[in-house]
Image (tube, rainbow over all chains, first blue to last red; front, side):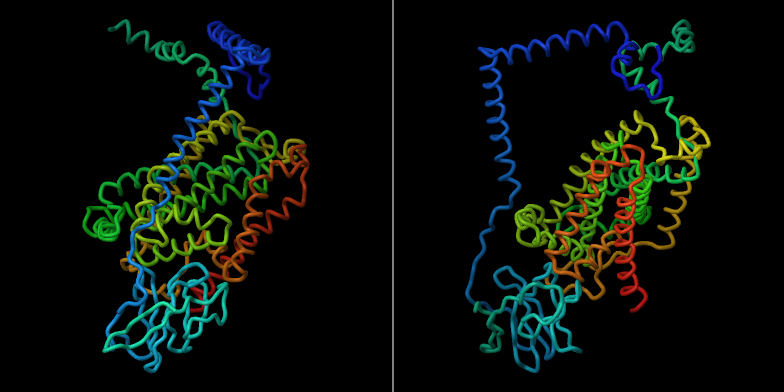
Length: 180
Length: 360
């Protein structure tokens, strides 16, 4: 008993399968045929098939729903404030920028010749954090060469939009960022 | 006892198994008579085996790294440095894991493009192509998820960019949130990526790889169109043991190259990722994502994502689109599509290489 290479014909392949295997296969095939036939003729068997199918679907949904909900991260409770102290005056040297957290979001605070601006530090292209380019006197993203003005408006590059702007002021030696 | 040994010597063990595994015996018998065609393009037959070889190395070194690595925001970078600097041979295991990943991706690409150009995807091997395509996606997924684990600046921003591309796909924000475990790349992302990298993706890869290899065993090796008819086939050699031995030589060359790269060009350790630092100058992804990275710089994000998705779907379905190949005829259209795809990868990657390594 040997299978010839390149022989894909099922009937010929079956010939080489031993007697026990053939018997076992026949039993399985008969059982399957019986089910197909009884479903085709309808009746109680048919009803049971639908019932099993419906229950199976229901069970699948009941299992998948919590898994899907579990995988989706829940909203963390975070304090949303309208304005916050993010740094001390003097912490950001003239002609430089610092990324601070405001409402859990990275915000760039720029100090250009003593004049402060603030905007989201997340590049609107693919979410890298931007930096101040002192040479060009504008804001630059190292990932894909996006450029913004010192107030966060788009100049050039692949990004679709401006950076979200925030208000910034110096109050009693503190730098305060607030929503616009 | 002596009787039993005598019985085993006369092929009794084989008989014992034959009686218990049933028709599987014939499958094994069938596969053991597999042959490999010999012709002037035979060299390409080695690259699938090499991809598999580097995958096995990934499993072994990956399990070893798991002994010390800690997948949390606070400990990831520290444990990564500990492996590199304190654990005996830790540097070697980590370097082998990084380099072997790169070589695995490289071998996979060579394997895929050679199969494409030899039109090995044609009937009856459509499913081999499809499972191979899924393996390609899984391999890139493994590379991407593994890349974040050192939790250094480079890893952090590479993953940020990668996930950022999702924002241009419909429903991408939803997927991004699940992958990131929140609105941004944080420690949550690290934990999720770790789970994907060490459990889900390797598990799926093993499953699909089994299908790919079983199909390989039953269908045998493809011969390029027309080679048989034009008498370019110099004969066939048995897979066991002749080709396997040659494969082994290929693996040894691959292993030597791997160790050479690890020792001479070690991967850097970098700085711990800081979510409040701007993206560093000269940031770029791993070489196998260079083409897509460059393309994202050149065209608007949505255009890039749509064109790349269409090209990928065509690529995956090529056995069904190229109807001529199934009739053992060459269709120049698909060869041109392949050359354009390969050209896109090579040219775009070269631009990145030029801008980041030569110009600066």
